Image 1 (cartoon, rainbow, N blue to C red):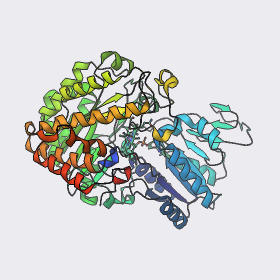
Image 2: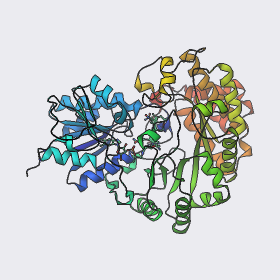
Image 3: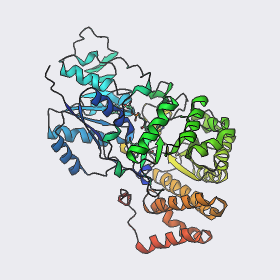
Image 4: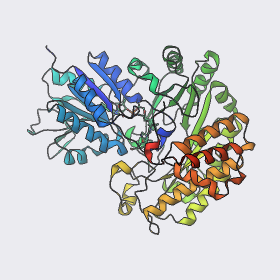
Length: 518
Ligand code: B12
């Protein structure tokens, strides 16, 4: 067989919203796995992170012209779908014969809308996990086979003949093949870590850091009505073995100098035995990588007595989604937690001397300036080191969507990034919501800095680094700069000095200020 398809460009499209990227540069671990699987199947891969590199469209064009891919693939959560499609459009413009592929959560659920809107641009949607489906699709095309035989796809076909293959449904010209079963043994996956352009990845709050994103488990069994992840994983959960995972951390440290990593897992702690073994192995083997992670409030409560182990193993930062201080709203979100439990979880994280972070989802149809004021007070009382006030984003496939749909005022998916409000409360405008969100951050962090001396010394230092990021590089820059005018005099000298410095330099506070880390 002479292969026609050989070269695959995996491109993370240049989406920027000023949220998480202000804290660092984050690699695409999904593409590290896809690249590993493609290479194992004999394909040549260009792993290109245009987002983290802050590349412009002209840079992307140049890279495509140089690599001359046969296939251009990208990945899109909902907010990134607009730039994702723009990227595939550019690829087709450069080479009309290129095969375009797109995966991730938005494509998995919204492919009908995508094919309706951009039928000329998207050749294949990969639904669900991509490590098996993608190479199988390319092998099938190279052999002149029918992609209808490849599970986990959606694509358009002019000639809609059935070919004897069981497809799920056909709506117009869209062929949807049966679902791809989840990969059972995650330890067996290849990861192409050597393709990552390591020098660009660092964590802004830590000097001399080299940041990775790693994945120790996949899935989520929670029922949150606003989230996409339980849908993507069909409320299932699988995990790597502790040994395999800790080996990887040690390898990343030794081979690539990684000293901090974010766990991509929705719930790394779900299996208590496995998680404790990971902590024990990290204590024993000292892989040289500290971890930032997210988990469930209830797992923190469960693990209260082993929190010192978390700390000793190198867990540096834990995010738990509190989302709301109103039980009625937690019930609407189907969080499965009680208000009091969230407060307790944050207390436990703080007592273990680990950085605590949480977020509150606001901008719901019944929100008012009073409910914003309440949530600010609540955030102060819960006392996480960091609290973020997010605008609800109505993923079109989420359970809560039908309830939010009548209130959506902005339909531009590019704004579905939890920063820009798109749902209009009955008694507020979107502008007012945005102002309230900014005000909430400002008041929360002002309170934090007025009480900075109550934190242990290392956390004080960390918080000052966070303030520098918020003030100079994040979407909250403008709000943070206004702190000085709102009673900033009770704040520590270092904070006042930063405020004075930024005022004197009259910094540009547009998003462009979130520059790549030098
Ligand atoms: C890491 C991460 C990030 C990284 C992304 C780095 C990167 N370039 O990939 C960073 C920190 C930059 C980020 C940013 C954002 N994120 Co984020 N992020 C995550 C997180 C924690 C893990 C994703 C991950 O790596 N999973 C592990 C890998 C192995 O799985 P995967 O990505 O799903 O990939 C697999 C499949 O989906 C599939 N696949 C995916 N893409 C493709 C493409 C092809 C071609 C193929 C074949 C297959 C394929 O195959 C992969 C391997 O099986 C998830 C939450 C979670 N726990 O999943 C949120 C999550 C994806 N983020 C989310 C959001 C909203 C954002 C932001 C828009 C807003 C915000 N406040 O965080 C920002 C935007 C940032 C910006 N640039 O402006 C949402 C998306 C919701 C949605 N339904 O759209 C999630 C789900 C969090 C949540 N629970 O709501 N994020």
